[in-house]
Length: 151
Image (tube, rainbow, N blue to C red):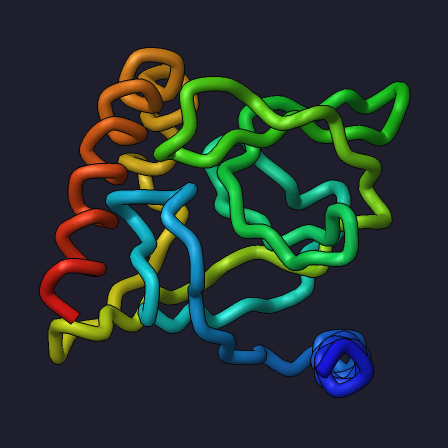
């Protein structure tokens, strides 16, 4: 399984390197309520100079691809501070080379709609995150429990 997953990620990396947009499923609750399990996201590469707080990035951390909101850019160290909207605290800083891309579209599983991301609402979440993260974390646990019960 790990070998297949690694091959899949290498293939996604190659497509992103060619300038293509890739589509992948979401599995966790760390970005609740923006992203939910079974949603699908579209990712495209992004240049360092185009990174802005509020964007939802996909980056590699401990062998996993994670989608979290960018909350600060450290130009000197070329590092980024991120946080899941549904988490109470920020992540450890990540280095720029770990970024796979930025989420450009969300396709909701339980809805016929898709929408673009990284709007003014997403920039607002950078400032609201310290408070909303705790609220979303709690609500995410309740929703996660409900999904397990009803599925």
